[in-house]
Length: 221
Image (cartoon, rainbow, N blue to C red; front, side):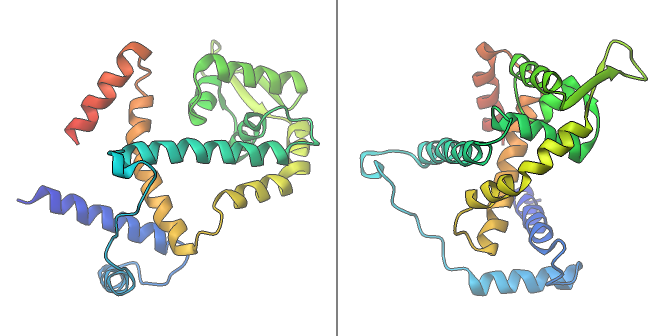
């Protein structure tokens, strides 16, 4: 049995569901999937290998992708910094943590930190800052008194709401001039990449063993 082919088909189905979600361009069945495949084949040119700086000297595509991701993170941070320039927020992490609490409800400190892919010391510092500002509060868990549950306050909701217009603009700018189709393709690729790294992140590995274990997992894929 060709398991690689099965894997590729599953990935195509996932991409179809992402692109068709809430759009209903195609029926959510086999016929809709076949129509989507046909349309994709008609609208997609053969993949061309782009040029990049250092390519002629042997620079790898992995190096380019890694650099571009780092750059995108820095661009996004600069827009976020501009969005909160005249606010009480001291960093983008402040409003990102509040948005997480607003969107998903109360959660433990550990859950909140993991949801934002931070290490514990940095996450605790952000949470303490939110509590100090009165934007969040902590209470004992109903199921485990040793666990502290973090909840966004009315003041936090108000502060977040006052800045949301600028935050939304900063978010929209990050995707630049990508078309809707390109955004959907990017979501699919970044989601796949995130799933790989998140599975490693959840293991809470020590720095001395992280690289070797991550590389071993990559080799198994």
